[in-house]
Image (cartoon, rainbow, N blue to C red; front, side, top):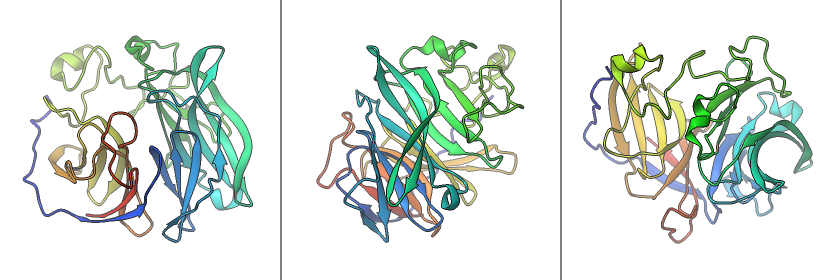
Length: 306
């Protein structure tokens, strides 16, 4: 069974400064080796923060279907970005009256990102639950989360890519050692995390049914976690509905030690979190996404020094 949620008392709040303001639903952040911070806006723009200043012109404006929660979402930079200039994005597009999610590669040259190459296309999209978070793993493969697009049963359908974690080569091809023929690689190789049959921890019953329990769950609360980063001995999780940054501390065997909330109800909905080259956390707010309460200057990028 999953251990009871251990929530530590609130500690002193971290130092927070605003890096950029006036963004329209910033969704994903990615740092280049030279310190430039790239950010996607759900309406279809890729922006850059350079030397602590948001550049006025986007490096790319993509034609996306910004409907509900859909639009331009995930972003990852090639591990050799300085040499290749490759940016990877995941977005929702309209196709023959339907919404589809696709993963594409762009090339940055002379301050503009173009030469769009589609790597994976046709995953069912929707006005909710599109997933589309992108990250490169230590194995050099591109990992993409794909939501259920509002159709929960797709997550358990082995012939559909929705509700899965996808693993691709940087050129979009299928790695030879992927565990499933539909290009799916779960967080632990081949595991099934239960949605929609199980939500949260189900203990021995989940294991008997072939499902894997989470490390931690919100119990009666709702966090709606959206972004995650590793810093120190903790996972830092940005929560949308929870309107907080969660610090989840684990032991050497990845067992839960404690969960602490910071920035709770201070800056509104939090969408993404990454670790900057300076060792600070960079966090996006998401108060203009149709479910939050925008404040003056929203949306923004925050620099958080835990």
